[in-house]
Length: 62
Image (tube, rainbow, N blue to C red):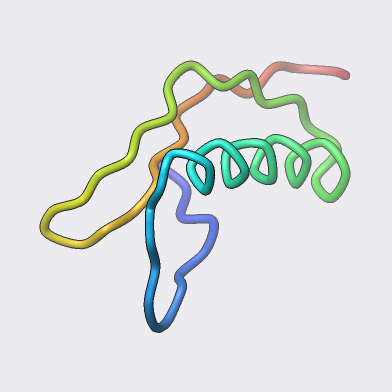
């Protein structure tokens, strides 16, 4: 498990924000970490704390 970011304050986990966040996670792995992340599931979780969970597999090489 990897916690990518903690957002202080109001966070609306809308469907569009979910998709944008998932894309940002994939870009972060590629551009900043030099790793390929293949998303397998992106989920909005509203309770008990609103969040977006991105579950994926890290691939070797690019």
